[in-house]
Amino acid sequence: MVKDQAILILAHTDLPHVLELSQKMASYFEVYIHFDQKCLLPESYKSKLKENGIHFIQEISVNWGSWSIAEAAIRLMALALDNPSIQFIHVISGQDWPIKPIREIYRFYENNSTIYMKAIEAKGVKKSGEPIILWQQYYFNYDKINRRTLFGKIFHRLSMGLQTVCRVNKFKTLKIGKTIYHGANWVDMPRDAAQFMLSYLDNHPNEAKLFKTGCFSDEFWMQTILCNEPQFSERIIKDNHRFIKWEKQHGSYPAILDDTDLPSILESDAHFARKLNTKDSAKLKAGLQRDIFTNTKSSGQVLD
Image 1: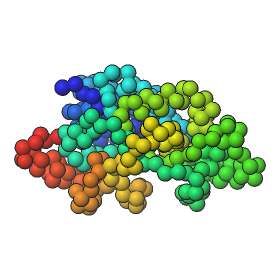
Image 2 (image 1 turned 180 degrees about the vertical axis):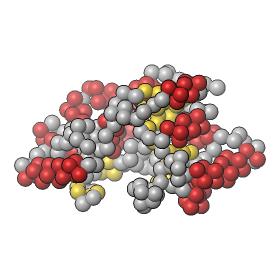
Image 3 (image 1 turned 90 degrees about the horizontal axis):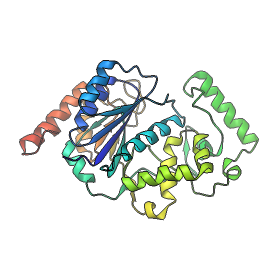
Image 4 (image 1 turned 90 degrees about the vertical axis):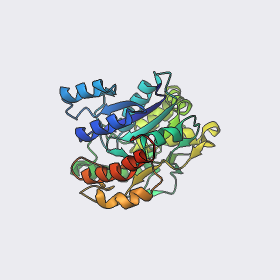
C-alpha cells in the first residue's frame, strides 16, 4: 500500500502515548513526529519508531506562545512534502487519539481537495481579556522568555501595556495589509495548500517577520495566509474534526480526557480527540477500542 497521507505529530511529553499513537496511525499513514528538544528521547524509543517506519526529528526547543510551535510544524511539513507520494497532511498533537477507525479517517480525506481548518477574523475577538489582534500587532519573544512562568506573565502584561502606550503597530511598520485570521493549529489540508504556505513564507519576509515576532503565531499563520487567497479560502471548511473539552480536568485546560468522556466522544463526528495521556486516559482508550475499533471489526471492517 502506497501511503499518500501524512500524520504530522507535535510531541513534547508522554512518550509511551506518542509511540502508541504513532504505531496506530502508521497502519494507513506516513507518520512524522517532531519531539521538543527538551524531551528526553531514549534510544529504545528511537529504535521502536524506526522499526515501525516512523519518521522523527528533534530540532526545535518548543515554548508555549512562541513561534517555535509553528516552526516545528513547518519543518514536519517540509519533511513530508519531500515525499512526492504525500497528497494530504494532518497536523495533530502528541496528546491526540483517533476516535474513528483508522481506515475510515483515511478514506474521508482520500482524493479530497478541501481544507479543514478553524478560522475566524481576529479583529474584535478577545481571549483572556486581551484583543487577540494585538498578539500580532505587537512584538513578543517567547522563544526566549517562558510565557508560563510568573516572570513571563508579568513581562507579558508590562509589554502589552507599554506597547499600547507607545502605539506600536507592526502592521504599519511591515506594510501588512492583509486581514488577520486566527484558529487552532490542528488542521487537515491537501498538498497544494501546504506547499503554498511554505513558499509564501519564503517569498514574503515581512509577513514571516510578523508571525515570528508575534504571540501564539501558530494559531495565526496558516489561517492568515490561506484565508486571504481566494484559490484556497473558498475550499476551507471551518471544522477540523477534533473533539476538545474546554474545561479543566486532571489539572489541564483544555481537559485531559478520561472514561467519563466516552459517551460524548461516541456521539461526536470528530476524527481525533485531545488531550489524552497514559496515566488518566487508559480506561478511555480501552473503551474506544471496545466500542469503536473492536465493534467495527465484528461488522466486517479492519480493527484499525
